[in-house]
Length: 174
Image 1 (cartoon, one colour):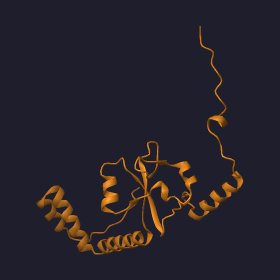
Image 2 (cartoon, helix red, strand yellow):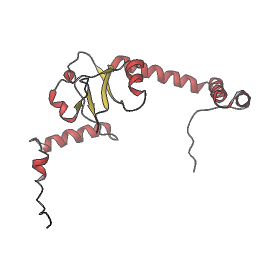
Image 3 (tube, one colour):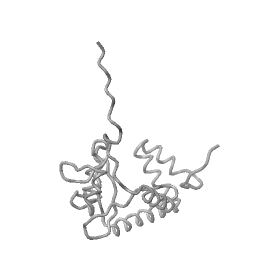
Image 4 (tube, one colour):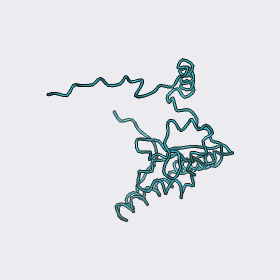
């Protein structure tokens, strides 16, 4: 005899909805979207650690990513105790080490770096990139070295002997 199908509990009981002013919350989201226009972004995560911090999420599942970001780039993992509002953990999970994480398996970890240093580094990277691409000979030399590493000296000599200019950029192909 077939088992009688029991009615599933209503959605509200399975996933409790917090009692909030949804209209006011929507206005905040809409205003934030107006500021970014293309990207709604997310609310800032406030920390109780003194200083102005640049925060980012790191996918620790990617091979070597965690070591690169934490040990080479010197980002510091954010601990759950460093969140200014403990209620912010509602959308996150804690790793076994006590770090703030998100994602299906809790493998995206929140890390921080002093904002002043982050901005200095990004500015220096942009300036170096601009210098490299504005000097055609430097760009040709870098291209030649890259070709040598991948295809050998003969290919690199061919690239180095090109006449004309080398430019970095994008071209629309139709």
